[in-house]
Length: 266
Image 1 (tube, rainbow, N blue to C red):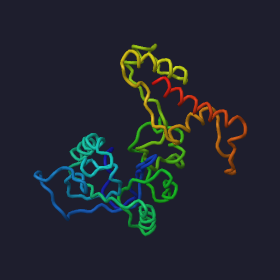
Image 2: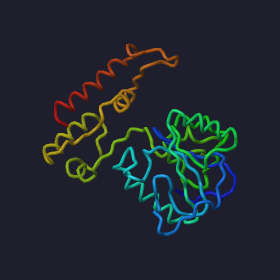
Image 3: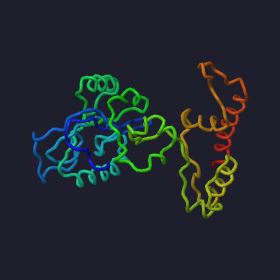
Image 4: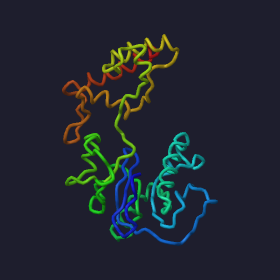
């Protein structure tokens, strides 16, 4: 997090799951109430920080920094370091955390925002962002180089030059790789074609005795291979077009590539 906003009645930060965002609704920071000392934990599942000024935030247990409460406990240590760094840098604040049920989350957030009583911040699904445009506060002063964001992120979160939400968990599919292995078995550049993945992968498998290319074989992971060939499943009206314009061939190419990955052990 960047420097916290002034503790006055204002529009606040919102954030998202799925392809995720953090942006801003109208809440009111609280003063007083519970008091915490150095002997209290800096972070708990329901509270981040120990300051006198309380902010409220709604999120998923997917993002809690407490491993025992987390839906992704392997990520909790990294989240804990980030949250501790923020709390130590802003000792006057604490965040009171709520974990709403997903089925009611959006409806409750819309209702609270429309009545002028939202939380100070919330994690939201990326598809919800447009429903909160009128309540969101610009984040331009807290984020550098907005133009570095993926185009689809800017399309969803920027309005009239204002960044209204900060994407924190993206559905974009990227190739992560170990540069040391790329340097050792390739020319220093990551593979850019399926053929290069297979060739370089085989060399790494033979030389290192490891599985060189890991991915989840699920539709949302495999469809980018299809779309990357210009493939389309439906037209602009939503009608299926798999049998048209080379779409079936593109899908067969994807399935053949996956089959070759399995057959070669890459």
